[in-house]
Amino acid sequence: GLPALAQTAKPTVVIVATGGTIAGAGASALNSATYQAAKVPVDKLIAGVPELASVANVRGEQAFQIASESFTNDKLVTLGKRVSALLKDPEVSGVVVTHGTDTLEETAFFLNLVIKSDKPIVVVGSMRPGSAMSADGMLNLYNAVVVAAAPSAKGKGVLITMADDILPGRDASKRVNIKTSAFGSQWGSLGMVVEGKTFWFRSLAKRHTINSEFDIDTIDALPEVSIVYGSGSMNMALYDAAAAPGVKAIINAGTGNGSVPNYAVDKLKSIRDKGVMVIRSSRVADGIVLRNAEQPDDKYDWVVAHDLNPQKAKILAAVALTKPQTTAELQRIFWEY
Ligand SMILES: NC(=O)C[C@H](N)C(=O)O
Image (cartoon, rainbow, N blue to C red; front, side):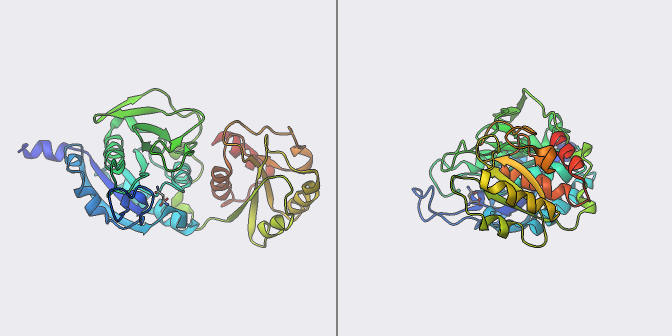
């Protein structure tokens, strides 16, 4: 065995497990899509990848055991506070969060906005349960621990390791279902992990973690934000439900460049008049929504989500609106993060 000094010199990485398919189990090796998520406890996940021990001193914590479609704002806040506390421990070099892939993009962006640490935070999932042929969770988890233990990953914002890529938690999203290459960003990946080594090619230009004005240690709840999905022939009652009392913002997942039907404009104006923020995003996965293009945002006092998809915009709006914000301040936040 290694001398004791070499053992203790290894970085310590904590795996905070929340469930998902990476902790899933199916009836047979053929069940790649039909299985139960959130079954396998974190210690068993770690034991399933003995190679982790050569990368870091790894220990696990079971935060939740849920499929990620069942994540709530309360769970985000609980998880964020725990990750923040772990990273304050000088013994901890980095944190890995195992997570279902369905809302992994929301959690990764949330942590990217609110954790005041430059230590690596890696969110990871899998598309196939560990019981399936060509299960992807083992390698994704191994890569996550490699990145969380890597000094080169410091200060890069919250990262996602899926299918060999190192992706930015800010703008990577689930773009393909079923397939293991599920995650991508229109701005590309930041790098790759191959055979336990990290290779970096880009960095994030937006504010995050240590340079964020938001801090999970001062956030105890997130306000409610609704998304209304744009289409032809929209039902205006959806807007009324979306703007129910207590809702602080509506993300309009508009068509095209965040366009709004002529018969919906007065509805959205009246919602804004009631004090609810109106934020124009798009149902189109890529591109950016420009201010005062398609709709006169200055005149209506609306905000544009820039390149953020509706679910990312929902997270940023919820975090931003934990503090009072004018429309101009909220728009500034959407440019900067
Ligand atoms: N691949 C997955 O993890 C999907 C699962 N429904 C989840 O998000 O928990």
